[in-house]
Image (tube, rainbow over all chains, first blue to last red; front, side, top):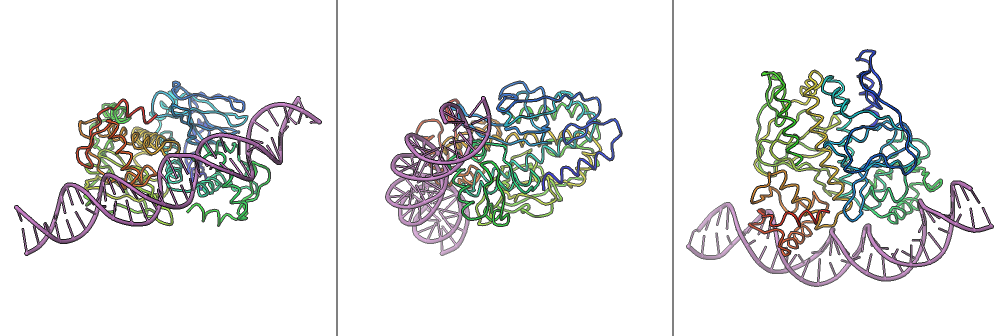
Length: 227
Length: 227
DNA sequence: CGTCCATTTGAGGTGGATCAACCCTAGTGG
DNA sequence: CCACTAGGGTTGATCCACCTCAAATGGACG
């Protein structure tokens, strides 16, 4: 639902702008912005917390996780980035998160400085970036609700619903990440994630079709769990 | 630290624009944007989850909390809004959060539609809104780390540090909210918040000067707790 | 067919929730 | 000035959801 409205907003804007545009993932930019395609292998790091934030990225295919680390190694995955998601844009000059490829992943890379210049020069670019950021904030706010107030099984249910939405409601939901990553995203351990999935399975709400392939048998009851 | 950089960014932009500007909280807008001042009493609701999102707000004085509710009444406070913070801007057409005044609070109100129009017409307005949203996202990301991976005492320590930053590092930190609100913000109960504050006190890190007035005796060790 | 991970399953421990008193402090009214 | 009250805050005892540690199972790939 989030994705749909963002996509239609982008399309609307596309119709208005001149022919001198190119796509940077979901947003339209002027041809002046140089972009290049790049590839990252599974588990390869794209950038680390503290690195200078020179580039911004858009996922073409594959999946990326961005996470924050605590001094003693505890890890919180802030977001998973799927095709057409932008990432790597930080408010400060250095990255506040580490980004790794979860699978073989292709991205489009652009210069942060150049994109910011375009935002200064062109209201429609700034507006698109603003909407994209607002959508990410909306997602982050929903995660705050999960992490702060939902039980383990409710978090997993809400997570499955979101992944289903973002992956387009296909028949079989193929999760691109390990149990451990889901745990680090939901503030749980991988064991608890496994048990929660098991619980949803034994209630007949989901069906396993391989460890990372899940069929949502009863979306209504799944929504019920998410409160 | 976040606030400082945002302020300087806003000042930078101010210097460039013409005289036909007015302030909407931290951002500069064209005079065409109608704004009005409004007052809300302590505990008064400003808008509710699900209301049509017609207006956007900037805090003048006082404090506001915005929260999401689960079906059974569980509550997660997504953010506290202090003077100069913008709030009420949702990605969708309806508010996804409920906003209440924590104390006697003055706000500036503007039409969401008009502000969006300005963002479409003026790149600098869109860019400022983008930066503001990016900063909120940065804060939300930090909270995700707290809620997902920090212990109770670490969450409270991180919370005190953030409030200290946002309130300008004054001698006595005056919290505008109840223990219960802090709990609903940090994913804890009010009892646990109280015990955590007590623990920090008995370690000599903070000093109580009234239940809502706290002196940060040892900011370095406080940072240590936040990891 | 064996190795390496990811995942599941099991048993036990614990941090924070819950439930329940109790204690402040400010405000109110006599 | 001093009860009285009410709401916020603290403190204590118990419980349980989830973590931790450990071992078994399964699946992908050489």
